[in-house]
Length: 375
Image (cartoon, rainbow, N blue to C red):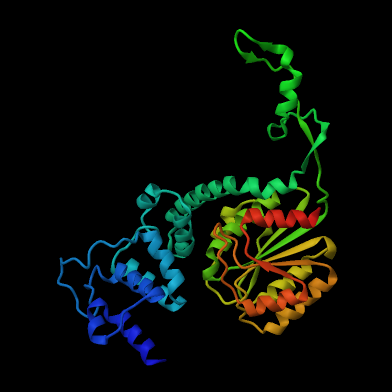
């Protein structure tokens, strides 16, 4: 450990009051870690964490963090062992009961994605009563996500408008306004200035040839992939609703868990996720290979940061076998609304050299990409 890193560590331990003596300030992720520690420990200690505040005295003022934001920050900024200690102190030492032990607080909570992530981080600490309420809250957030994502994901599979043909199926999105107006002009009432529609007209659609296609979604469930887990579960549920596409959802860290049977219920899927393990991408790809029925009609979507914890060569060998068999392999560095990529570019480059596709896509962009492959 360098002298600079050692000073930064002591600064985090001792607090703001030690900054001048140590001669070092904090920036970037270290400043975020300091804010997360201050949220918890400044309620007992002042900005100088080496000096206990007198009972009844406040800390450094009201924190700008709320409990859900604090939970998410802790899981993003600290290693697993530190997270466990912080959670223990929050519950036992400071009785910070929001989210995990207080059903009244959870009932009043406003459902949103931030709260969903915090619930998933802390569900292992919840008793049965609180967990039941958490499931209801998660379901509300997921329903909102489903409504937002369903249209962009399913749209590429509904078929293109065929303006040369008419349809007797009265579907709003296929409504032909121009033809309807032109052919109903005889029903125009000039006094009332209204056009009465006797016969509405609708376009037909050209069905896409997606029969017998298979999509296998592999999701890295390490702590940094929380957004990807959430959106992958929801996106997989939407794909699952497209009957002409067979969708598999598989979660992995150093183990592999196939949750395809819960694919139509992303709430149950996400409530069973345990984030924060190691990473064995090669094992996940090997499992996917065992699911493939028709390689040339199979797409494997690997959602990961590509930081492999197991031997890299095994991963590359398995990927090569999949690609040579005819499987389409897509690696996604992110699958959240921001599609902010953070991944091992060296390993990703090796996969691309073999013929895989690697990028960052939102759920809607993923659907567009898949649709171009299954035409």
